[in-house]
Length: 164
View 1 (cartoon, rainbow, N blue to C red):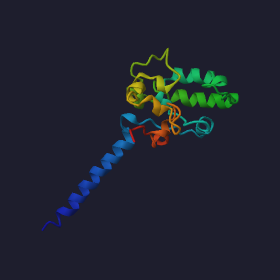
View 2 (tube, helix red, strand yellow):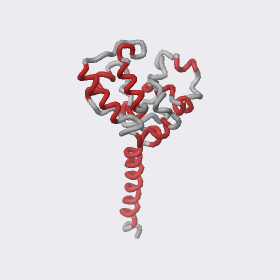
View 3 (cartoon, helix red, strand yellow):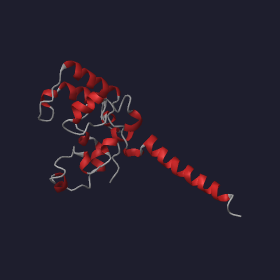
View 4 (cartoon, rainbow, N blue to C red):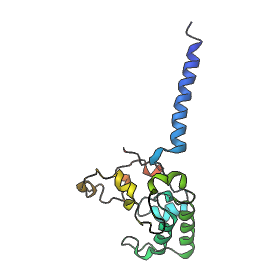
Protein backbone atom coordinates (compact mmCIF):
# COMPACT_ATOMS: atom_id res chain seq x y z
CA UNK A 1 0.00 0.00 0.00
CA UNK A 2 2.85 2.42 0.63
CA UNK A 3 4.41 1.70 -2.80
CA UNK A 4 2.55 4.50 -4.63
CA UNK A 5 3.83 7.01 -2.06
CA UNK A 6 7.47 5.92 -2.28
CA UNK A 7 8.14 7.51 -5.72
CA UNK A 8 6.47 10.71 -4.56
CA UNK A 9 8.59 10.82 -1.39
CA UNK A 10 11.77 10.07 -3.33
CA UNK A 11 10.84 12.71 -5.88
CA UNK A 12 10.28 15.32 -3.17
CA UNK A 13 13.55 14.39 -1.50
CA UNK A 14 15.42 14.69 -4.81
CA UNK A 15 13.72 18.02 -5.49
CA UNK A 16 14.66 19.39 -2.06
CA UNK A 17 18.27 18.27 -2.48
CA UNK A 18 18.45 19.76 -5.98
CA UNK A 19 17.05 23.05 -4.73
CA UNK A 20 19.66 23.18 -1.99
CA UNK A 21 22.51 22.48 -4.43
CA UNK A 22 21.07 24.90 -7.03
CA UNK A 23 20.68 27.65 -4.43
CA UNK A 24 24.30 27.30 -3.33
CA UNK A 25 25.51 27.25 -6.92
CA UNK A 26 23.45 30.29 -7.85
CA UNK A 27 23.72 32.45 -4.77
CA UNK A 28 26.76 30.84 -3.21
CA UNK A 29 25.77 32.19 0.14
CA UNK A 30 27.23 35.39 1.54
CA UNK A 31 30.73 33.97 1.23
CA UNK A 32 30.67 33.21 -2.50
CA UNK A 33 32.53 35.33 -5.00
CA UNK A 34 32.72 34.12 -8.61
CA UNK A 35 36.28 32.99 -9.29
CA UNK A 36 38.34 34.50 -12.08
CA UNK A 37 37.24 32.93 -15.35
CA UNK A 38 39.54 34.73 -17.75
CA UNK A 39 42.55 32.53 -18.64
CA UNK A 40 44.92 35.50 -19.04
CA UNK A 41 44.05 36.82 -15.59
CA UNK A 42 44.31 33.33 -14.08
CA UNK A 43 47.74 32.85 -15.70
CA UNK A 44 49.22 36.26 -14.88
CA UNK A 45 47.76 36.84 -11.41
CA UNK A 46 47.42 33.22 -10.38
CA UNK A 47 51.06 32.42 -11.10
CA UNK A 48 52.09 34.13 -7.84
CA UNK A 49 48.97 33.97 -5.66
CA UNK A 50 45.30 33.09 -5.77
CA UNK A 51 43.70 35.10 -8.55
CA UNK A 52 41.33 37.00 -6.29
CA UNK A 53 37.74 37.40 -7.48
CA UNK A 54 37.31 40.91 -8.90
CA UNK A 55 34.00 41.30 -7.03
CA UNK A 56 35.96 41.48 -3.76
CA UNK A 57 37.12 45.04 -4.48
CA UNK A 58 35.62 48.09 -6.17
CA UNK A 59 36.84 49.14 -9.63
CA UNK A 60 38.83 52.06 -8.17
CA UNK A 61 40.95 49.59 -6.18
CA UNK A 62 41.67 47.45 -9.23
CA UNK A 63 42.48 50.52 -11.32
CA UNK A 64 44.96 51.77 -8.72
CA UNK A 65 46.46 48.30 -8.26
CA UNK A 66 47.01 47.87 -12.00
CA UNK A 67 48.67 51.29 -12.20
CA UNK A 68 51.18 50.29 -9.50
CA UNK A 69 52.39 46.92 -10.81
CA UNK A 70 56.03 48.01 -10.57
CA UNK A 71 55.62 47.77 -6.80
CA UNK A 72 52.87 45.21 -6.35
CA UNK A 73 53.03 44.61 -2.60
CA UNK A 74 56.82 44.61 -2.76
CA UNK A 75 57.18 42.72 -6.05
CA UNK A 76 57.56 43.83 -9.65
CA UNK A 77 54.48 42.40 -11.36
CA UNK A 78 54.62 44.43 -14.55
CA UNK A 79 53.28 42.88 -17.75
CA UNK A 80 53.23 44.19 -21.32
CA UNK A 81 50.75 46.99 -22.09
CA UNK A 82 48.25 44.80 -23.98
CA UNK A 83 48.13 42.25 -21.17
CA UNK A 84 47.78 44.98 -18.55
CA UNK A 85 44.87 46.50 -20.47
CA UNK A 86 43.22 43.09 -20.81
CA UNK A 87 43.57 42.33 -17.09
CA UNK A 88 42.43 45.83 -16.09
CA UNK A 89 39.35 45.62 -18.29
CA UNK A 90 38.41 42.23 -16.83
CA UNK A 91 38.95 43.28 -13.21
CA UNK A 92 37.11 46.56 -13.51
CA UNK A 93 34.15 45.17 -15.45
CA UNK A 94 33.68 42.46 -12.80
CA UNK A 95 34.53 44.60 -9.77
CA UNK A 96 32.33 44.70 -6.70
CA UNK A 97 30.72 48.00 -7.64
CA UNK A 98 30.16 47.12 -11.31
CA UNK A 99 29.52 43.66 -12.83
CA UNK A 100 30.20 41.76 -9.60
CA UNK A 101 27.86 43.81 -7.43
CA UNK A 102 25.47 40.91 -6.82
CA UNK A 103 28.15 39.10 -4.84
CA UNK A 104 29.93 41.96 -3.13
CA UNK A 105 27.24 44.04 -1.45
CA UNK A 106 27.97 42.73 2.06
CA UNK A 107 31.74 42.65 1.70
CA UNK A 108 32.00 46.19 0.35
CA UNK A 109 29.33 47.76 2.55
CA UNK A 110 30.74 50.98 3.99
CA UNK A 111 33.75 50.99 1.63
CA UNK A 112 34.40 54.32 -0.04
CA UNK A 113 34.99 53.84 -3.75
CA UNK A 114 37.07 57.02 -3.82
CA UNK A 115 39.35 55.81 -1.01
CA UNK A 116 39.05 52.09 -1.60
CA UNK A 117 41.82 49.92 -0.18
CA UNK A 118 44.20 47.86 -2.28
CA UNK A 119 44.02 44.95 0.12
CA UNK A 120 40.91 42.85 0.57
CA UNK A 121 42.19 42.23 4.10
CA UNK A 122 41.62 45.92 4.90
CA UNK A 123 37.90 45.85 4.17
CA UNK A 124 35.78 46.40 7.26
CA UNK A 125 33.72 43.26 6.62
CA UNK A 126 36.84 41.13 6.07
CA UNK A 127 38.35 42.38 9.32
CA UNK A 128 35.11 41.60 11.16
CA UNK A 129 34.89 38.10 9.69
CA UNK A 130 38.48 37.34 10.75
CA UNK A 131 38.63 39.15 14.09
CA UNK A 132 38.75 35.91 16.09
CA UNK A 133 41.79 34.54 14.23
CA UNK A 134 44.75 34.89 16.61
CA UNK A 135 47.83 36.77 15.38
CA UNK A 136 50.05 33.70 15.71
CA UNK A 137 47.85 31.83 13.23
CA UNK A 138 48.57 34.36 10.48
CA UNK A 139 52.28 33.70 11.00
CA UNK A 140 51.93 29.90 10.89
CA UNK A 141 54.20 28.29 8.26
CA UNK A 142 51.16 27.03 6.31
CA UNK A 143 49.45 30.43 6.30
CA UNK A 144 52.17 33.16 6.35
CA UNK A 145 49.84 35.91 5.15
CA UNK A 146 46.30 37.18 5.53
CA UNK A 147 46.14 37.07 1.73
CA UNK A 148 46.62 33.28 1.66
CA UNK A 149 42.92 32.45 1.57
CA UNK A 150 43.57 28.86 0.48
CA UNK A 151 45.24 28.08 3.80
CA UNK A 152 41.87 28.17 5.55
CA UNK A 153 39.29 28.20 2.74
CA UNK A 154 39.84 25.11 0.61
CA UNK A 155 37.07 26.18 -1.78
CA UNK A 156 38.55 29.62 -2.48
CA UNK A 157 39.67 28.73 -6.00
CA UNK A 158 36.04 27.86 -6.77
CA UNK A 159 34.79 31.07 -5.13
CA UNK A 160 33.70 29.64 -1.78
CA UNK A 161 35.05 31.36 1.32
CA UNK A 162 32.83 29.68 3.88
CA UNK A 163 34.48 28.48 7.06
CA UNK A 164 36.03 25.09 6.42
